[in-house]
Image (cartoon, rainbow, N blue to C red; front, side, top):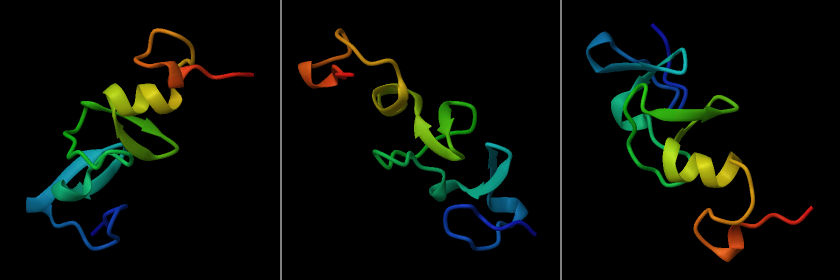
Length: 77
């Protein structure tokens, strides 16, 4: 029986949610930034961790520059 990547407890068949190639407990599949509960297939992944596609993943790992919401979003090189 696989262990949940978030809480490291066993995931039983009745409570299993499969995403990112792993089995999760439904309450454990949350965005790493905002803690929003996610559904399989409707989120993004970075280094094996789930993020909600918009706005968290876009803000953290998307292209920098103007037009993304605020002046703080511009990245200086």
